[in-house]
Image (cartoon, rainbow over all chains, first blue to last red; front, side, top):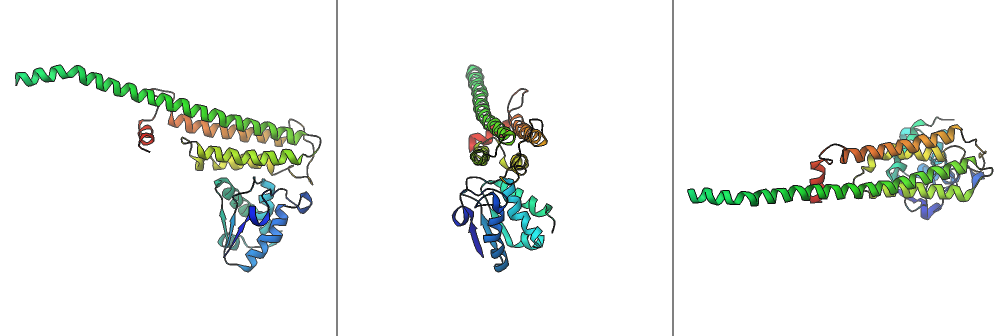
Length: 103
Length: 165
């Protein structure tokens, strides 16, 4: 099991969908931290607390993007555990994983 | 027996006074709780309207503003934390409204690479207004459930729980 603390391991100011949008985008987070962790671990805990806020485009690209990359939804749901004081973040991430379609 | 009845009779005014005081205290307490809750909700609505205004300014601006984008994200986060701290609100029941609000502002046209100035009547701005109103309605619904507009103006069970906690 691995725990990714976004505020500590990535940035307190995550923002943007694509890499061209800034250094701490959802695409960059997915490529740098999320995909390697899911490929290597049975359980990946993502701690969302401590960051200054999340945009929906960041969340959609980081988590919905996993499905577009080819990860099976059931595998993502089994491996991924979201920890967030703000309950809406977990709900929104679940929505993006459920609604995303493989590319 | 006569003395007992006489004693009971003389106690009636006291009993009436104590029961009356109890009811007065109960209604007074309920009124204070209601005013306190209303003040908290008004502050919450001020935050909500500020986010709505910021979102409109952001999407209708000529150029992308990283500063405003960051401010919106921070204020959305503060809004959710504020909701979780208001005792009469069930934050879990407002999750859908919060997701709708965040999505309406930050899912489309929120990043530098895709940003384009929007007209004031565009779908994004309309959706932000709609999400903001949904949030206000959901919050107001919880307030009305707790403090109905009909006598006795509060839910007795809920008030008792508040006193015990």
